[in-house]
Image (cartoon, rainbow, N blue to C red; front, top):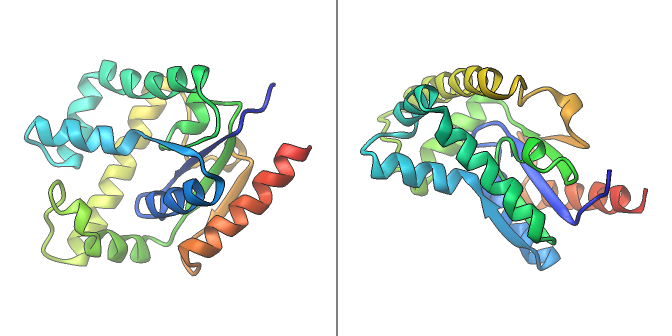
Length: 186
């Protein structure tokens, strides 16, 4: 399969995909394609939080397909960019596929403190945030299996897996760049 100068960042909720993708775009001078922003925008326009919208999309698979197909279509005519999307690896298999893991307690704390999430996620405690993350994780897994017969957390789908729990975003980006450059040379 032909390799493209594309890095797809998938992974768990609040694993740092957004922050790391910004660092990578700056270091590589790449563009960025974000499925999550589009999903959040659709949720907000529908008057739902992201968990409610996950449930809604379950009954409207055309929305999911539209989101995933948009990344694949974009990759047909573009190179030198980062895909920040849970199924970016699936939509663009010729990309360097990265999966970012994180401890659930750390993820909940990160998400709870993330001001950008406040418009679509309104939780009073970190524990509420954690419960919601776990619920979204299950909903997404069911949806992706029903639509595509894939498990996003199956590490065999990726070229590189990194646990971000105890690493800074800069450290994660540096590790990804190191592996990406080796992958390009192979």
